[in-house]
Length: 55
Image (cartoon, rainbow, N blue to C red; front, side, top):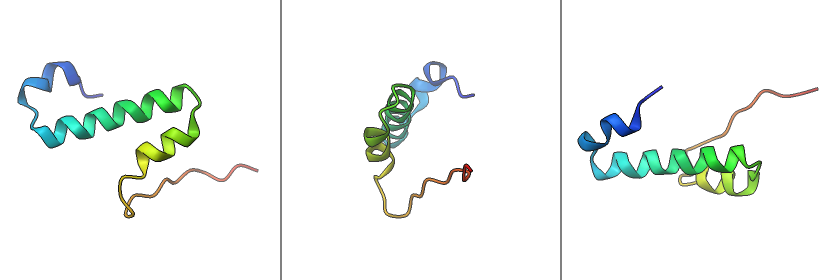
C-alpha cells in the first residue's frame, strides 16, 4: 500500500488528481454507492471494470 501522506510533497498535479480519484472511488465503493463509483471510474473510454462472474 502506498502511504499517500508521506509522498504528497513529491507529487505533481496529475498524480494528486489521480490519487484524489482513487480516494473518491474507495469512498463510493465502501458506501455501496455503485452508481457514483462507476462515474468515478468512467473518466476514459479506455478504462474497463473487470470482476469475476458470480453464479
